[in-house]
Image 1 (cartoon, one colour):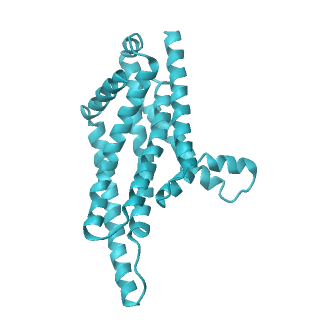
Image 2: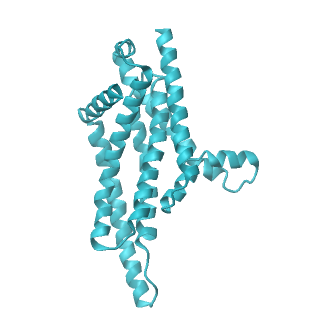
Amino acid sequence: MKNVLLICRKELRSYFASPIAYAVMAIFGLIFGWVFFNASRDFVRFTLLQSQEGGGPVSVNDSIIRPLLGFAGTIGLFLIPMITMRVFAEEKRTGTIELLLTSPVKDIEIILGKWLGAVALYACVLLMSILNIALLFAWGKPDLKPVLVGYLGLLLQGGCLLALGTLISTMTKNQIIAGIATFFLSLLLWLLSWYTAFDTTVTSQVLGYLSIVTHFENFGKGVLSSKDVLFYLSLTYFSLFLTARSLESLRWRA
């Protein structure tokens, strides 16, 4: 575990030693902040209209937070490839992968360390959105539990996509190719629920179950479902397992 944490810290420092971390956090912060501003403005207008017409109170969680957390996952779809494209591809391009594989560290420790470093950066990216959400608690009374469950869902969703990106990064030394391949695979898992939404066949149901959007719906509602947690953890484990096999293959070829 000590080696895993050492590699994780080294990986996280390398992100912040380059423009990657700052660029990803800035892009996420600007986009999320702009959408937050528009969502809050529309909510205030709708609330005033409801009060004038004698309507009941409007839920901040349902009207602002839930859509925003879903949108944060959508932004992550574009930013996660930027995080994972260099994980192993950069090591292969610079030739340091041989030193890494011949070091007295197990493959699984290398993989977990690099993956946890990517997850830590993704968590830092999500922290940018908390600054906006905190304003709602300062000026309103949203329910905290659905917010926490929603962020847990974002971390689990991001973790499985980061694991997929880590796997793809072991297959090429070109960072651009790794980033593009990760994006299209993530996009495929994102769109599966759309393609199978109006089809009731067994195949469509299986494909719909593999969609990462389907399993975030309960998290967005503030519902912590064991089947959704299990799906994200299983996909993460399977991706990291294949990453270990890919590194093992690379070791044998070397």
